[in-house]
Image (cartoon, rainbow, N blue to C red; front, side):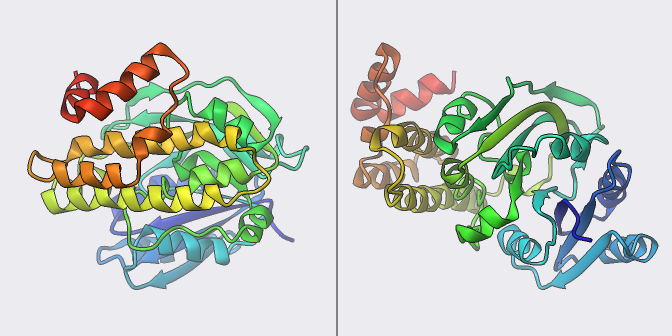
Length: 318
């Protein structure tokens, strides 16, 4: 029988975290899921651990091995090979709370395209850093849901949502290949194209913030690539959102403003030598004009950005 949920896990050299990750799924209070593991070319002992769990829980696990192509392609492959009505993403160094699947299952009576759930951040010692609470909602269209979610944390994090597979496949959503910040380049589009979105107040996801993770890599070339990959994500999102015909232009403004603001703020990661070229890229796209200016604070922000970009960066980094 088809499981209600597929839990998709991309693995790359995270062998020491896998038992905690896998066990958090196997201990779920509702047993209505499958586990789809994509080993993205790991060179450590990850596959040995995966094989051990597959052998012991062969009715739950599906395992695939690929050459290292990155998180985007691993996720795309996981979706393709999932059988659940809904799927969620779990990073292999993170773990779930035991009632997440149960809470998700009790919130699909209105057939949502998306269900958002809450997150807490965890440090390297597995101590809670912060819990993020949001006011729940039910049955909103994608634009109205985004207008609420945009005021919270982890807006475009793919691991914060359960996705109805039929909706995802019908819209031909794919994570962009060979980039960092693949979540930013897709999830805002997924949200606003949803016909029905629920958000529950259950904190079901534990996000472990490791010092040596991909996203905390401090290599200069990697940082520069991350920033320009963000710009690629902006270009794709803007082009796709502008093509949506069943959403009023006024309703798109919040989304445009969010992706523009995020792309501007990302420039903080560039040094003094690289920053001018990035500013020129922003100007080419007239990104500043996409920012909302419906309040005095927002109007002032636009003025500062257009007249003294570096001053603006100093102000937001105080």
